[in-house]
Amino acid sequence: DAKTTQPPSMDCAEGRAANLPCNHSTISGNEYVYWYRQIHSQGPQYIIHGLKNNETNEMASLIITEDRKSSTLILPHATLRDTAVYYCIVQGDSNYQLIWGAGTKLIIKP
Amino acid sequence: GAVVSQHPSRVICKSGTSVKIECRSLDFQATTMFWYRQFPKQSLMLMATSNEGSKATYEQGVEKDKFLINHASLTLSTLTVTSAHPEDSSFYICSAGRLGNQPQHFGDGTRLSIL
Image (cartoon, rainbow over all chains, first blue to last red; front, side):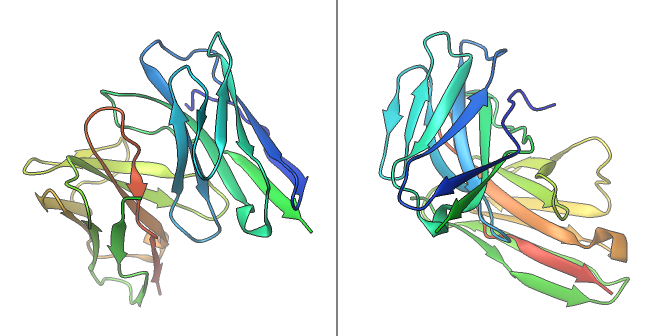
């Protein structure tokens, strides 16, 4: 079973920030939080990952709570091309297997 | 970012045919490659994990004699669906990973349709 829970769907207006929450209350000390997204009929795309500090790259920001039991992926200025299913996954650095939950279907509306 | 090439992108063939799908890591040496299957409106399901030069590890319920995996080098893994039947029709996706705190990188998937 997936170690994370996410809302099944979210809407966001184009140009606004999209904030996608994820709960991972059973995360272990050596497990990272990874975010991927899957645009329809394509392979998943890596977005960002982190251990305990907040992270930012050219695609998104990742905010991890101090207790590490939840996190939020932020797409600062959502575009229509950001419409996809977003997956939050926890993974240890010695175990490659990704356990995929249902993810959040994010719809960006014009 | 890292590039993983998966080929072919789409296959349509008759029942009983064997189909080979290739997964290449183009710009890094992948210590481990993964094969997933995804049915419509469902999440990815891991089929098997393969390490270069060793036998693949299959997930429960996945027939190793039907889904043959070869991982001959650090940049190439193949999945052969033997004697495919309509129920094998699905979206097959590969990914490549490296040791340590590194994300997996995915191919664009192969849509397999068995008539």
